Image 1 (cartoon, rainbow, N blue to C red):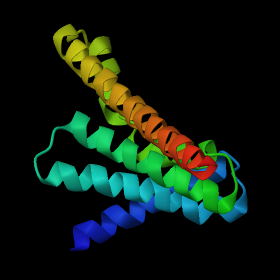
Image 2 (cartoon, rainbow, N blue to C red):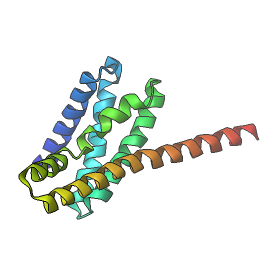
Image 3 (cartoon, rainbow, N blue to C red):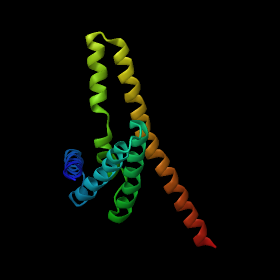
Image 4 (cartoon, helix red, strand yellow):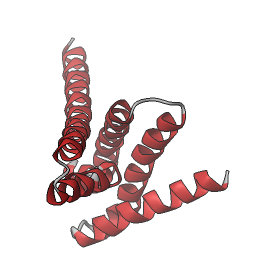
Amino acid sequence: MFDLTIQLAFSFLTTAAFAIITNVPKRSLISCGLTGMLGWIVYWGTGQFGVSTVLATFLGAFTVAIFSNLFSRIKKLPVTIFNIPGIVPLVPGALAYQAVRNLVLGDYVAAVSFSVKVLLVAGAIASGLVISEVFNHNIRNFREKKEHF
């Protein structure tokens, strides 16, 4: 339980801090923090059940995108205000560091291995955001067509 509390607190704080750095409107800071926290908890929680890092990252990014769209509508702000800070906890910074470190040390096999993992995780983040946006777009189109009938 304590571990969950730590995960919730630090994912919220890192997302909100990045939102402050990127100069988002003050009225959206809590929503940005919640978006990143929810995405991280989905990532962390699925990882606790043995799901692969790439799939967990995809699910986390998908969650970020869903809540970004929700908060975008509630706050009447662009979705990127919530998306960009929200994905920060999911970014594979440690993996990228290990890739560069091994490259510099001359361990090219490990460098390539870490680089492939970084690319897969980055692709999972992008895929989660895009697929969620496609779903949201289709839902909006369905609602608009339904209103015309």
